[in-house]
Amino acid sequence: MLSLTVRPLGKTTGALSKEERLGVVALSKIPLLAGLPDELLGELSSAVRRVQYAKREFVIHKGDSNIDLLFLLEGRLMVYDVTPEGRQTGLNFVSPGEFFGELASIDGLPRSATVVAAAPSVVGVLPMLAARKLIFGNPIVAERMLRHIALKLRASTEYRVLLGIPNAFCRVYHLLHMLAKPDPGRLLTIENMPTHEQLGLMSNTSRETVTRALQVLYEQGVLEKDGRRGIIRELDRLQELMREHQ
Image (cartoon, rainbow, N blue to C red; front, top):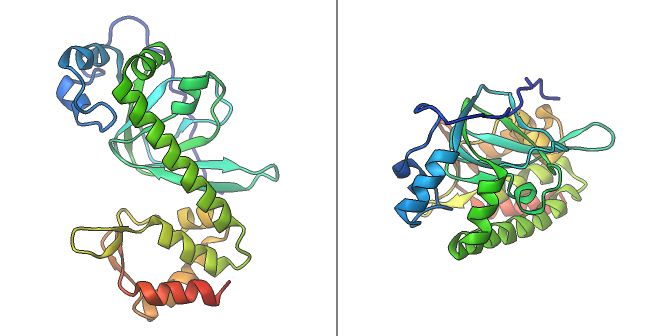
Protein backbone atom coordinates (compact mmCIF):
# COMPACT_ATOMS: atom_id res chain seq x y z
CA MET A 1 0.00 0.00 0.00
CA LEU A 2 1.28 3.48 -0.85
CA SER A 3 2.60 5.64 1.98
CA LEU A 4 1.12 9.07 1.39
CA THR A 5 1.24 12.56 2.83
CA VAL A 6 -2.02 14.45 3.32
CA ARG A 7 -2.19 18.13 2.47
CA PRO A 8 -5.60 19.61 1.63
CA LEU A 9 -6.09 22.11 -1.16
CA GLY A 10 -7.09 24.74 1.34
CA LYS A 11 -8.86 28.00 0.54
CA THR A 12 -7.58 31.26 -0.83
CA THR A 13 -8.96 34.53 0.45
CA GLY A 14 -8.44 37.89 -1.23
CA ALA A 15 -6.52 38.56 -4.41
CA LEU A 16 -3.99 36.04 -5.68
CA SER A 17 -0.32 36.94 -5.67
CA LYS A 18 1.67 37.12 -8.90
CA GLU A 19 3.27 33.76 -8.05
CA GLU A 20 -0.12 32.13 -7.49
CA ARG A 21 -1.75 33.37 -10.68
CA LEU A 22 -1.54 31.76 -14.09
CA GLY A 23 -0.99 34.00 -17.08
CA VAL A 24 -3.17 34.11 -20.18
CA VAL A 25 -0.47 32.44 -22.29
CA ALA A 26 -0.13 29.55 -19.82
CA LEU A 27 -3.91 29.04 -19.72
CA SER A 28 -4.19 29.12 -23.52
CA LYS A 29 -1.88 26.09 -23.70
CA ILE A 30 -4.34 23.95 -21.71
CA PRO A 31 -6.37 21.98 -24.31
CA LEU A 32 -9.70 22.57 -22.54
CA LEU A 33 -9.13 26.34 -22.74
CA ALA A 34 -7.32 26.62 -26.07
CA GLY A 35 -8.82 29.20 -28.44
CA LEU A 36 -10.94 30.98 -25.83
CA PRO A 37 -11.05 34.80 -26.02
CA ASP A 38 -8.22 36.61 -24.23
CA GLU A 39 -10.78 38.48 -22.14
CA LEU A 40 -12.14 35.22 -20.73
CA LEU A 41 -8.65 33.82 -20.21
CA GLY A 42 -7.81 37.02 -18.34
CA GLU A 43 -10.76 36.44 -16.00
CA LEU A 44 -9.64 32.87 -15.43
CA SER A 45 -6.10 34.04 -14.77
CA SER A 46 -7.43 36.12 -11.90
CA ALA A 47 -9.23 33.11 -10.44
CA VAL A 48 -6.90 30.13 -10.95
CA ARG A 49 -4.25 29.57 -8.28
CA ARG A 50 -1.17 27.33 -8.35
CA VAL A 51 -0.61 24.67 -5.70
CA GLN A 52 2.58 22.60 -5.50
CA TYR A 53 2.65 18.97 -4.36
CA ALA A 54 5.55 16.73 -3.44
CA LYS A 55 5.61 13.12 -4.63
CA ARG A 56 3.08 10.95 -2.74
CA GLU A 57 1.08 13.91 -1.44
CA PHE A 58 -2.70 13.74 -1.75
CA VAL A 59 -4.23 16.23 -4.16
CA ILE A 60 -7.84 15.21 -3.48
CA HIS A 61 -9.41 12.52 -1.33
CA LYS A 62 -12.41 10.41 -2.28
CA GLY A 63 -15.41 11.83 -0.41
CA ASP A 64 -13.99 15.36 -0.14
CA SER A 65 -16.60 18.11 -0.34
CA ASN A 66 -14.21 20.42 -2.22
CA ILE A 67 -15.55 20.65 -5.79
CA ASP A 68 -13.10 22.97 -7.58
CA LEU A 69 -11.97 22.16 -11.13
CA LEU A 70 -8.31 21.19 -11.31
CA PHE A 71 -5.64 21.33 -14.02
CA LEU A 72 -2.29 19.57 -13.94
CA LEU A 73 0.36 22.08 -14.98
CA GLU A 74 3.53 20.11 -14.20
CA GLY A 75 4.35 16.59 -12.99
CA ARG A 76 2.17 13.49 -12.96
CA LEU A 77 -0.79 12.36 -10.87
CA MET A 78 -2.35 8.97 -10.21
CA VAL A 79 -6.08 8.45 -9.70
CA TYR A 80 -7.07 5.49 -7.54
CA ASP A 81 -9.90 4.08 -5.46
CA VAL A 82 -10.01 1.92 -2.34
CA THR A 83 -12.11 -1.25 -2.16
CA PRO A 84 -14.34 -1.97 0.86
CA GLU A 85 -11.58 -4.38 1.98
CA GLY A 86 -9.08 -1.52 2.00
CA ARG A 87 -7.17 -2.49 -1.15
CA GLN A 88 -5.96 0.34 -3.36
CA THR A 89 -6.76 0.08 -7.07
CA GLY A 90 -5.14 2.47 -9.54
CA LEU A 91 -7.53 3.83 -12.15
CA ASN A 92 -5.51 6.08 -14.44
CA PHE A 93 -2.88 8.81 -14.64
CA VAL A 94 -3.22 12.56 -15.20
CA SER A 95 -0.64 14.22 -17.45
CA PRO A 96 0.28 17.93 -17.81
CA GLY A 97 -2.41 19.92 -19.60
CA GLU A 98 -5.21 17.62 -18.50
CA PHE A 99 -8.03 18.58 -16.15
CA PHE A 100 -9.63 16.48 -13.43
CA GLY A 101 -12.23 16.73 -10.68
CA GLU A 102 -14.82 17.78 -13.26
CA LEU A 103 -17.59 15.46 -12.02
CA ALA A 104 -17.79 17.15 -8.62
CA SER A 105 -17.66 20.58 -10.26
CA ILE A 106 -20.61 19.64 -12.47
CA ASP A 107 -22.91 17.80 -10.04
CA GLY A 108 -21.76 19.26 -6.73
CA LEU A 109 -21.38 15.81 -5.14
CA PRO A 110 -18.33 14.62 -3.15
CA ARG A 111 -15.18 13.48 -4.93
CA SER A 112 -15.53 10.05 -6.51
CA ALA A 113 -11.85 9.03 -6.37
CA THR A 114 -8.53 9.87 -4.74
CA VAL A 115 -5.72 11.64 -6.58
CA VAL A 116 -2.10 11.52 -5.44
CA ALA A 117 1.06 13.07 -6.87
CA ALA A 118 3.09 10.35 -8.64
CA ALA A 119 5.88 12.93 -9.08
CA PRO A 120 6.47 16.49 -7.84
CA SER A 121 3.55 18.37 -9.39
CA VAL A 122 1.94 21.77 -9.84
CA VAL A 123 -1.86 21.96 -9.97
CA GLY A 124 -4.03 24.85 -11.10
CA VAL A 125 -7.19 25.25 -9.00
CA LEU A 126 -10.27 26.97 -10.46
CA PRO A 127 -12.90 27.65 -7.76
CA MET A 128 -16.24 25.91 -8.17
CA LEU A 129 -18.35 28.97 -9.09
CA ALA A 130 -15.88 30.08 -11.75
CA ALA A 131 -15.62 26.48 -12.99
CA ARG A 132 -19.38 26.11 -13.39
CA LYS A 133 -19.59 29.45 -15.19
CA LEU A 134 -16.81 28.31 -17.53
CA ILE A 135 -18.41 24.93 -18.26
CA PHE A 136 -22.05 25.94 -18.59
CA GLY A 137 -21.46 29.35 -20.17
CA ASN A 138 -19.16 28.33 -23.03
CA PRO A 139 -20.40 25.84 -25.66
CA ILE A 140 -16.85 25.00 -26.81
CA VAL A 141 -15.76 24.13 -23.27
CA ALA A 142 -18.98 22.18 -22.65
CA GLU A 143 -18.44 20.12 -25.83
CA ARG A 144 -14.80 19.37 -24.92
CA MET A 145 -15.89 18.40 -21.43
CA LEU A 146 -18.57 16.03 -22.76
CA ARG A 147 -16.11 14.38 -25.15
CA HIS A 148 -13.66 13.93 -22.26
CA ILE A 149 -16.30 12.33 -20.05
CA ALA A 150 -17.40 10.03 -22.90
CA LEU A 151 -13.80 8.85 -23.38
CA LYS A 152 -13.49 8.24 -19.65
CA LEU A 153 -16.65 6.13 -19.65
CA ARG A 154 -15.35 4.01 -22.52
CA ALA A 155 -11.98 3.57 -20.79
CA SER A 156 -13.74 2.68 -17.54
CA THR A 157 -15.65 -0.12 -19.30
CA GLU A 158 -12.42 -1.50 -20.75
CA TYR A 159 -10.74 -1.27 -17.36
CA ARG A 160 -13.54 -3.20 -15.64
CA VAL A 161 -13.05 -5.97 -18.19
CA LEU A 162 -9.32 -5.98 -17.39
CA LEU A 163 -9.94 -6.36 -13.65
CA GLY A 164 -12.19 -9.33 -14.35
CA ILE A 165 -9.35 -11.32 -15.94
CA PRO A 166 -8.36 -14.08 -13.46
CA ASN A 167 -4.68 -14.40 -14.47
CA ALA A 168 -2.42 -11.69 -13.01
CA PHE A 169 0.15 -11.81 -15.84
CA CYS A 170 -2.67 -11.37 -18.35
CA ARG A 171 -3.99 -8.34 -16.45
CA VAL A 172 -0.53 -6.75 -16.60
CA TYR A 173 -0.25 -7.41 -20.33
CA HIS A 174 -3.73 -6.02 -21.00
CA LEU A 175 -2.88 -2.92 -18.96
CA LEU A 176 0.29 -2.28 -20.97
CA HIS A 177 -1.75 -2.67 -24.16
CA MET A 178 -4.25 -0.10 -22.86
CA LEU A 179 -1.54 2.38 -21.86
CA ALA A 180 0.42 2.15 -25.11
CA LYS A 181 -0.17 4.83 -27.74
CA PRO A 182 1.20 5.15 -31.28
CA ASP A 183 3.96 7.73 -31.68
CA PRO A 184 5.03 9.56 -34.88
CA GLY A 185 7.51 6.76 -35.62
CA ARG A 186 4.63 4.25 -35.73
CA LEU A 187 5.84 2.55 -32.58
CA LEU A 188 3.55 1.75 -29.67
CA THR A 189 4.99 3.56 -26.69
CA ILE A 190 4.13 4.20 -23.06
CA GLU A 191 5.39 7.63 -22.13
CA ASN A 192 6.41 7.99 -18.49
CA MET A 193 6.23 4.25 -17.91
CA PRO A 194 4.52 3.62 -14.54
CA THR A 195 6.58 2.03 -11.79
CA HIS A 196 6.09 -1.64 -10.95
CA GLU A 197 4.20 -0.56 -7.83
CA GLN A 198 1.86 1.65 -9.87
CA LEU A 199 1.28 -1.08 -12.46
CA GLY A 200 0.48 -3.44 -9.61
CA LEU A 201 -2.12 -1.05 -8.21
CA MET A 202 -3.73 -0.67 -11.61
CA SER A 203 -3.77 -4.40 -12.40
CA ASN A 204 -4.78 -5.50 -8.90
CA THR A 205 -1.64 -7.54 -8.26
CA SER A 206 1.64 -7.29 -6.37
CA ARG A 207 4.74 -5.40 -7.43
CA GLU A 208 6.64 -8.70 -7.48
CA THR A 209 4.15 -10.24 -9.89
CA VAL A 210 4.46 -7.23 -12.19
CA THR A 211 8.25 -7.61 -12.15
CA ARG A 212 7.99 -11.27 -13.19
CA ALA A 213 5.45 -10.50 -15.91
CA LEU A 214 7.59 -7.72 -17.37
CA GLN A 215 10.69 -9.90 -17.27
CA VAL A 216 8.96 -12.30 -19.68
CA LEU A 217 8.37 -9.40 -22.07
CA TYR A 218 11.95 -8.13 -21.82
CA GLU A 219 13.40 -11.60 -22.41
CA GLN A 220 11.26 -12.17 -25.48
CA GLY A 221 11.97 -8.74 -26.96
CA VAL A 222 8.34 -7.68 -26.67
CA LEU A 223 9.00 -4.68 -24.43
CA GLU A 224 11.97 -2.35 -24.29
CA LYS A 225 12.78 0.49 -21.90
CA ASP A 226 14.22 3.77 -23.18
CA GLY A 227 14.65 5.91 -20.10
CA ARG A 228 11.15 6.55 -18.76
CA ARG A 229 9.54 5.39 -22.00
CA GLY A 230 8.33 1.85 -22.66
CA ILE A 231 8.40 0.63 -26.27
CA ILE A 232 6.34 -2.33 -27.45
CA ARG A 233 8.47 -3.92 -30.17
CA GLU A 234 6.38 -7.04 -30.80
CA LEU A 235 2.68 -6.23 -30.59
CA ASP A 236 1.64 -9.56 -32.10
CA ARG A 237 3.59 -11.47 -29.46
CA LEU A 238 2.11 -9.33 -26.68
CA GLN A 239 -1.37 -10.17 -27.94
CA GLU A 240 -0.42 -13.86 -28.09
CA LEU A 241 0.69 -13.74 -24.45
CA MET A 242 -2.56 -12.01 -23.53
CA ARG A 243 -4.49 -14.90 -25.07
CA GLU A 244 -2.22 -17.59 -23.64
CA HIS A 245 -2.66 -16.41 -20.07
CA GLN A 246 -6.43 -15.93 -20.19
